[in-house]
Image 1 (spheres, rainbow, N blue to C red):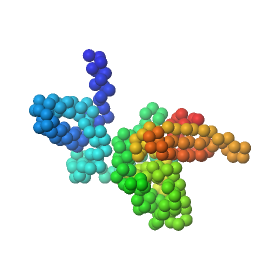
Image 2 (cartoon, helix red, strand yellow):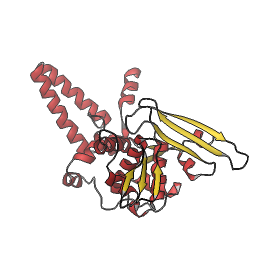
Image 3 (tube, helix red, strand yellow):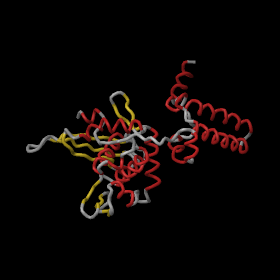
Image 4 (cartoon, rainbow, N blue to C red):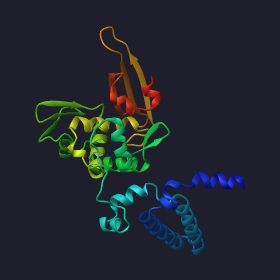
Length: 280
């Protein structure tokens, strides 16, 4: 009995059940469960279909959903009028007024982009799913986002690609990313935050870029392929400058660098990094 209880606890997702249960998500998943059960009943037998349906309902009861990524998919693909009917949309969005860590995190937490686990910050599962979906849907075969999306991120009139992950902004400024994946990740996150945060587009583009870099620093999985990220941190001493921290974050699966920084120890960007990185 103890083993069964532990197994149920591991399977359960309290953040998506009980008072946190999303009715649109539940309806979508029950509908999918009915369709799958009918398919099994036709293809195999009525008994198999009935047993599968009971199992599907149990999973939905314990986890809040049957299909992984449902909270993000429901929010993105259900018609707006249905989400409004269930009270899932609000005209009052959290407001972000600065890229400074604490007030920015307060706004991002209210928007369910990040959450606090003790002293650590982490991306919410919902935002990670939406972020990856956005990258996949808006990047072409070369994984590059379209020029209009890059221009919007910098309030620019014109952008031109100069190398794999370098763009020229309005013919006068070059901005580099460590990889095409990092560029696509920032553009996708920018597009998501435009719909989640009041005041996002009023921030200085460089402040927006700092927040986007901070989100990449929080990522534990590759925003493009979902591979595991590995970090390499080094403290750089120099006779003529203040000590710097070099931070490299790479994906084990696709091999793409996600973040590459060499900043002073006092840089606000390091405040976004996990404590073991920031304290290195």
